[in-house]
Length: 497
Image (cartoon, rainbow, N blue to C red; front, side, top):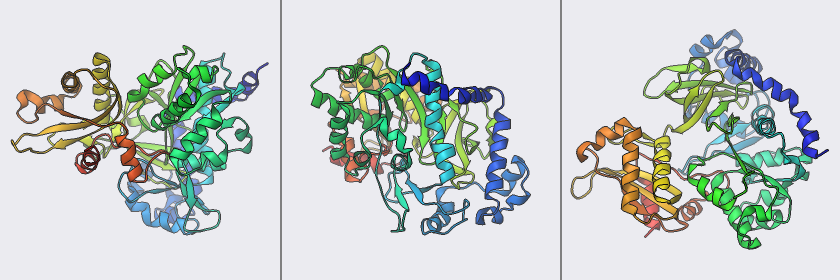
């Protein structure tokens, strides 16, 4: 009997429990909210907002304000200095340095012991539970897991208190037994220099029986490319013949899919998307035939959703499929009605499944076109399919007016495989954006408001160089995809000269 067969039995009770997501969404979420309020009623925040008198969601929504990081920053900083019982009971020692922000001011998200157990570790556990359920012939635990992580550093020099990438916090706190089935070794995983770490991970892992990968697609691809360089092989399954699944998250997989499929040609390879962030673990692609993810409703996360363009906020049982919502979370890490910055669109209810449609600050709406990341990903995927091109990284921003008084969108794209006809690629992208976004189509009508989009070809390695220059190479850092300002694209264009 294989180790996976034995280990698989451990997941059976949880697999049964997960069926509640099909019919009991509201009940599960109300249970979560009651638990969070009860736990935190003795904290400073709980006393300020009379948690001991809140009996249901409706009272919670009236009593507790919507928060961004700025509203909670002062309290979090006091927690970082060692104060107890501020946003969550006890002292919080760990803080995830938030990815997804490209300005100099970083966010430090509290990661409590309860949050680690009931959110951040619960998600990976359930990902495996779903994977084994969908793949009964799996040999996942008969080999090693290659897990990429960032690094951490002391927090205000307080003993035992650290800040860093969430992935580093998870590696630091992982059950020691897990280190027996994962690569690289802990010292390597927590190195801060990504270029050194990349080489060491590749050298440590290439001789092991790796069956599964976990990490951000862009950084994982960089490590895998180094594995191929060192091994001299053509395809990854020649190095790891038992490789069967990549659990990925952090950035959209669409721009990277073709590169992975060319690198890994084995028909038994699977890809499973997860929605994990510094603030929590929220969704899992539980059905391999459906790109939408299941919203995880029985962790220590209570969800609310604000319909984009309105002030209307509803709990999960009030959402409607097809609409774009900004997501608010309340968690056992001390985040209360916190706007995480992501936007989602539900594809169905009961069970509640969704796709990430973008960021609340990652869009272009300079001329009323309301272009979101989901549009951009679909448009690029279409243009790539039609031309055989492959996009590695990209960003886009408006050109408000050139010397001829013309306005347009400017896309800076680093191709892994360049299109033979860049003008055709640009036209296909532009046309598909008009097909899927009526606001963009209206602004492009007869070139009156918006001219055809412009594509600038980025040199190889441009985006990595930019991330490195800003101290964001590796870990969970991401390239900003769309922006209403030209701040990021101007920096990149200067490096591209």
